Image (cartoon, rainbow, N blue to C red; front, side, top):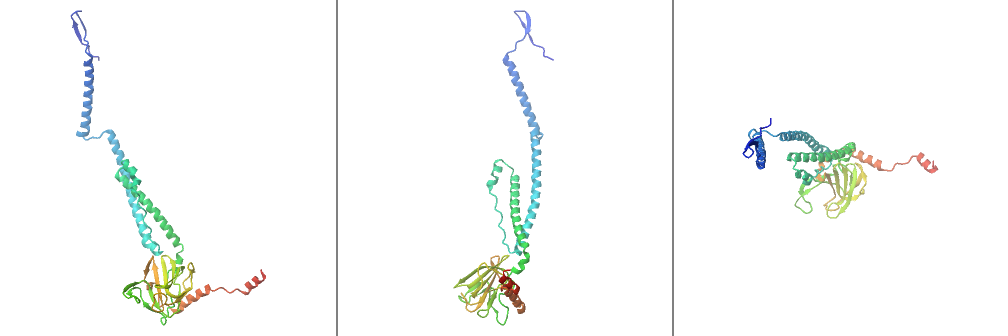
Length: 336
């Protein structure tokens, strides 16, 4: 319904004419209406948010979306907790069981990721929990790759585990005849027989006559043959694999060369008094994972002599060239 127009009396024409309102008043009313409307909107917004504590529809939508993402992050972190516990168990078993059994050195920890890797997340204002979750995910991924390689290495050795028993040095390096061999100096701290004073003796000295045969105590490869005038004298180092090495020192002669494949019971040299020695004896060391260990735990000096002789006789027979049969000789002569 339209408002009735206002009329004013015109004394000149003696008639009522529509009133002509100034233009500024019309604009003023419009401006006032806009201001009132804006004020009412602000009052509504203040009451809605501050007095009643309600959120705007857009805020509600953003909060709902944020809550969903927080729930997903919580779920991922719970899964990472389970995966982290699992990988820790595998790592512990690998270090304390598998790598110990096969004499493998512990693998180095994977390098930490640089902070620059996550710089873009910081610049984008990513939540701290999200950055932490991504770091955990990267860390677990790196540890999983490292552990996978470690288990591949253990798996390769496990396929050849049957050879491990023959490689570990487990017999005396000399024929254990108590009438000819005795332990002159045990493993551990002792008074140095040449210089005096207390020193650590990294092996075991077996005293016997000059030239007494010395044998390999396990399968392996000759790593070193050397002579030190003021030290071990003539020495041999054999790498048995699986973390084990043996050293034979003060020898009168050496019958092997670096790179030579050996088996337990192979003749490698003879007892002597070369280097820093006060008399004929064999200095024998067992080295595990780079550190000397007590050789007495790796040999039985009460081993039956017949059993020891059978071992070295077998190796001597296997090493000697096989005689050809008459049939083989005949074929060589005739070329057939």
